Structures are given as structure tokens and as C-alpha cells.
Image (cartoon, rainbow, N blue to C red; front, side, top):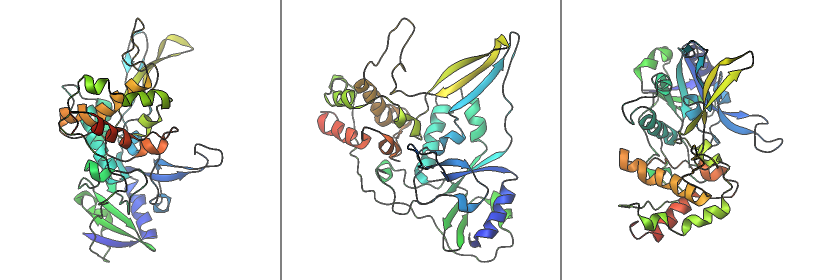
Length: 337
């Protein structure tokens, strides 16, 4: 069912939703851009529909609503430890199809990847529902169509901004009550991007062997990549983290354990006690990242980890393109056809 709702009426609905849900959406963050005087489009809680930025791609994905960049796992003293209180509010996120598909990938890593579930992630994930945002003609560097992530039916509401009103499809019966009394009905179905300007040639039936490991193409990235790790931090499916124990000044035996986002492209990520490191240069790290996104994950779960949002290409200061890397891999690998 769909409705045509005046924006001020939708804001009244939003006020009611915020009694139950924390509502996150892409917003314009003044002065938060990478250069002085520039803005950044990122996720934050909203109170009005007018705050939602529809015509730009966010720099960072919505994953930080569930998988926080810095999170305290527990507090400890000499005698005990205690987990932080769990927020009881449900979570509602304005999100595009590729990012909804990205949450499916994070679910595999945090919940379905073996016998031990990540309770911190799972407790939030069970509270999440999605508001679908359409992409129009798509954005620069997107290749979601090739990755099969341009469409989804995993959403509760579809909201399409129009001149003076919001077109709304209600897919989840849990939200019916919020729209009681609105009689201006309309037909609305989601419009998904069907073609991107960028195409990626995905290798099929590829095996990791010495031809892949020693492929000269990786050497280019040793020369170009600066190891800043931005590509991992903006990726909606990267899930690596490290641990930090913080000791309080007033008692050296008390503190908190935090987990913090980490990057496989940053120097020191694979360092072990004794000084050994598994990947010593940026070419090795690029090879690991690409094979993890386009081979390892597929081998375990049956589909690729990358969702084709293109954020890694958007953010790279050296203009490194993961699409061009994968295309080179296919053309140069004997088993990559």
C-alpha cells in the first residue's frame, strides 16, 4: 500500500516513530569534510524529513549504526567485569539497496560465521528495520548492478521525495498504525538502478595459486598505495577490528576494553609477537583485500562480499580503483576466465 503524504504530516509521523525508534539517515554535516570549509554527507539521527540528503552518496556507510568505530565491550576492575547497558530503542535506517545488501554480508561475518556469534552486533541487528532510498540514475564509481546488489526486498518502508510531499510504500505491517487516517493513496513500487557507467569483469572458477600470488599486477599497488586505510573504513562490508585495553588514571587495575575499527591495508595489521608480519608491502595487502572480497567470501558463503558501492574508489587519495584491479586480475590470470 502507498500514500501521498505532505511533508509536515510525515514529520508528525516521524515524531511518533522516534518514540520507539532511533532514526538514522544521510545528512549534511557542516564543516566535517576533508578540506577546510567543506561539508560531509554521513549518517546521523534525524528529527525532520528535510534533513535527509537524497541526491548524494554518503562518504561512510550506515554500518556504524550497528558496528561502531569505537565501542566499549566491557568495564573491568581487579574483581569483576561488566558489560555496558544495552540500548532498548529499536533502530530505523534510511538506506540504499547496496547498503541493505551490505548488512547481509556483515550478518554472515558477525552472526553466521561459525559457532560463536558477536552478541554486541546481534543485539543491535535484531532491532533494525530499513527505510529504502532509491538511487535515481546511480552515482559515480558505483557498480552495484554487476554485483547483483542494485535491488532488494528487505525493507519496511519506501520513501520517495516529491514536490511538496513524500510518496510512501508501507511494506511492513508493524508500521500500518502510524499511517492510519491518511486516505490519499497511490501506487508506488521501488525503482532500482538497472545500469551503471562502470562495469566489472568478475573472474569465474578462479583458484588461488602461485600465478595469483606472484602476479606482477600487485607490484603497482606497492608503488601507489599509501596505506592510509580509508578504503576499509568507508567500505560497508569491512568488519576487521582490533582491541585496546584502557586503564584509568585513578586506579591502574580498572579500565575498559574497547574494540576499534582496523584496516588490512594499514602497516602493522598482521604483525605478530616476535616481529613476524604476514603481509609486508601494500601489494601483498591489496592482493589480500581483493581476494577476500572476490574469492574467499564467495567460497564460504556463495556470493561476493563487495556490493559495488564504489566508496573505496571515491575516497582513495591515490585514485586506486578496485574495479580496474579486478579487471586486470581477470585478464592476466590463466584461471581467471
